[in-house]
Image (cartoon, rainbow, N blue to C red; front, side, top):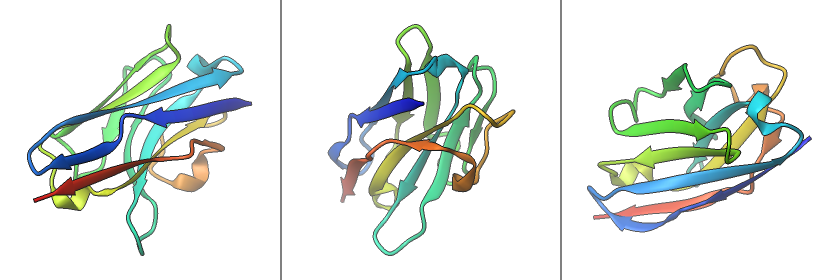
Amino acid sequence: QVQLVESGGGSVQVGDSLRLSCTASGRTPSTYIMGWFRQSPGKEREFVADISRNGGIREYAESVKGRFTISRDNAKNTVYLQMNSLNTEDTAVYYCAADARIYRGSRSKSAYEYWGQGTQVTVSS
């Protein structure tokens, strides 16, 4: 089992940047596939990005490609989401997710067994 804690959210202006962190504790976090999802009021939780165990493979939603970067530091048991050129449509609660069973990252939230509590990101114009 692994516990996930997100941090780094906040309120920013359009065009600003934020870096989210997700620190994992518990059972060998480096063996987990990690992902970021987000959820806006009234909408389904949607995929943002995922990263392989060694960080070599990363996938992004089309809406964030070129603006967001996912990375991980296994020595620190931490996954990051660098978010640049934020716009109002990025406003959401951002969740970190982890799973040890899947072979590679997944865009499906049902593929992930463990979730953090979420961190709010608000982008205003």
